[in-house]
Length: 171
Ligand code: NI
Image (cartoon, rainbow, N blue to C red; front, side):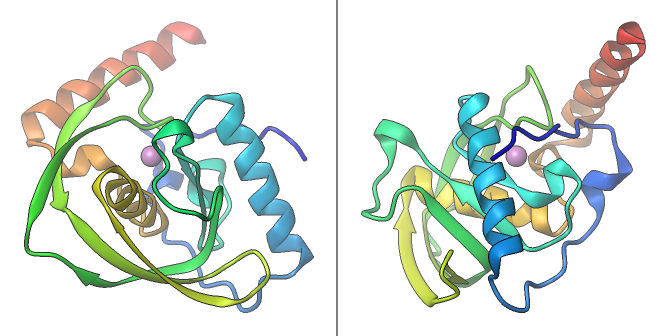
């Protein structure tokens, strides 16, 4: 396993759309393991391939003590939302690709997601609360969408300009 470098905004690669996985093979499993090790190294709860510059549709999720699902960690290839509740929830989200910021995001409270697990087995999972929020956040990444795109343009531009300044100062 390896800890991978995380792309941070602003970066055009974070807005690329990941491609479906044909079959979860040993290469996909290695990516899943590396994503999980990277997630744990940063104390995060979810990570998507696009954040490390890979374009397979793969996400990993482990909510730690807040995990509400018997499968832990969750490895998902080709995750697709097949149902989203009309009931909404607001969650304070953070993202390794948007370091040092958070934002209040409103999304469906409950979702059903179909996916291939780490053994290439088709699964369906119903999730609510933080797990549902995290799944939606990570699937957004696979479609090239950051959570800040759900914020007002004023707030988003403020965050992006501060991140740009931080990057400039690091050079
Ligand atoms: Ni994220």
